[in-house]
Image (cartoon, rainbow, N blue to C red; front, side):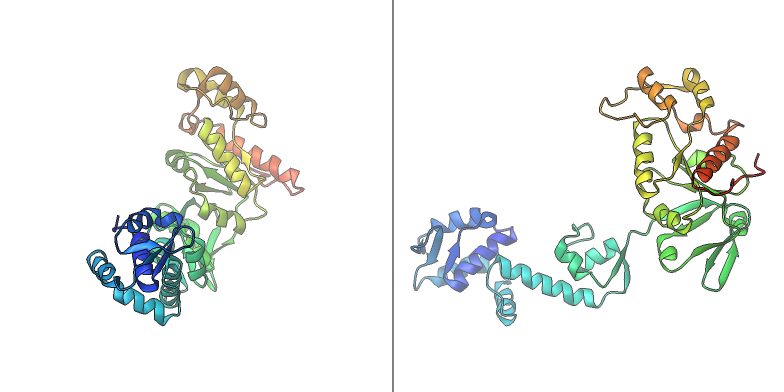
Length: 340
């Protein structure tokens, strides 16, 4: 019992103030203390009191279960806080605020929580949020990009050709902190942004000229949201698996970018017999707004992996046509006037 902080605080409150009200978080300790010979009913409902002249017995118990109690009591009294669980939590908040005041203006979320909370995986409560209000908390995600021709990566007066970076490193990787620090796109902006769910298709798919390709692994979309914001006028297309999770990912991306198109070309149906995976679709997954092929897959109990169609020579044309259709719906010129 005494390994829990709220129970030790119940005992401290009883010894320091002479009384202890019954509270939900301290019920076990309250009921145990109420049975001791040196406590009695106070006369108020659900409150016990310390027998006069027997505080030494309570202090001996405190010394056993919480040797540091005198320091905690002194801190509470010095801060003019009540000797109670509520007062102790207020004291913790004050300590967090002092620690947070010395933190850098930008810090990884886990690093920050380890400083002001019990550990790095502490829940970011309202209290901790208030303590860290002056610190920009990051998740430090990244986005992997296959750049379009002529695209530049800029920050302030500096600019690098994205295809030069990709030639050296294989691709361009932008970090959340770089984007927060002002890294932007320059040069010739892409005529289409293609987001791809799985790593293999992201690397292997052939795309029309002027298409920027981004790897968006499932639900990890914090950083791609920032990329969306940098390219507000560029048509976006998503390419993923045709399965229940793939449907949910598309819908999630549409919450971030409502105009994103779903790449489900008709020729993908050629793969149903040879590459289709027999698997059930959830009955409660609404597909009324899904392409016909997706609805047909559910009727047949089949899932299709995007890898099966990644190397199809018709895929680049399908991307260009879908991006062009999206562009025309928003009264812009065809992004691929001379595409494949």
